[in-house]
Image (cartoon, rainbow, N blue to C red; front, side, top):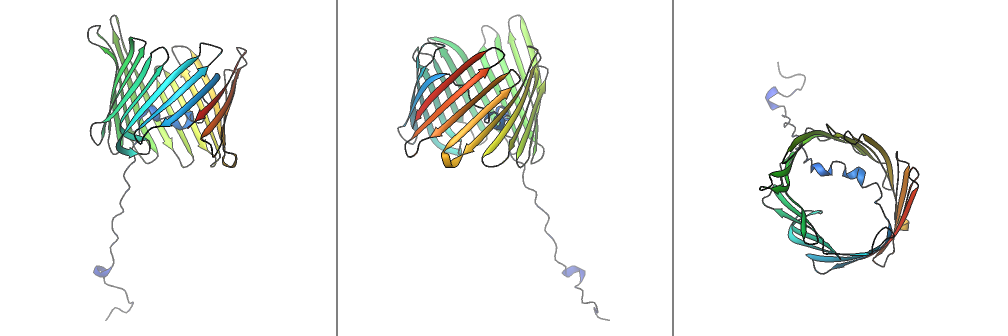
Length: 308
């Protein structure tokens, strides 16, 4: 008998190609685990500040900052930045050289290099007038789904002192990242190490991050309600200082008014807010901030103008 049911032979059935799983994303840097939550909170402001930015070319730009405050003497900062031709992402350009010098001659400088496609290096120097305070060297290797970083801080072969920090992050799924940090310090008569474990879970509209170690704990939660409203919650505990802090921050964007409002309230009875207003078509941004600590009865406010 023929194939009365009209079914195709087994060999003629189309075969489904095996499903290709998407590769796991890069977990990024260890220092950026809490970045989304921290960007929600307002930056401290005090006194009056004027910032003038000037782009000299596609690679070089400078900024002049004048700051006047009732808490100290007026200050001036010259900021210069050079960016090379190799751009890996909108926020990563190599090589990059950044320097900031104040009116007393103190210098903060950073140099970022791309040694290979996956290997990055960074050097940080900080001076106070003619005296070196900090020198730090970083090396970071970024794999397809992991990141490994090694940092040397203030290495002194003669004084036999060094601070070494090792970071490792691994993407286990598209949403879950686990890793750790090991801090080792050595100087004459003292030596020790601190281990911290870290985890980060990223959903569509929220991100939860936790760091736990012998030195304390740091937990943060970021939630993006919509394009205008973002909120963040932070909890920090320090076992050495026997201190804990809980903070709540929010970020409100009003695109029609060209305004951004950030606010915070924490467990130390401190409240604060910063309002930023852009003035198109002029390249001017105005910012007004106020912070009040009810527990210590301290209040300070600030106003800044940014041109460019």
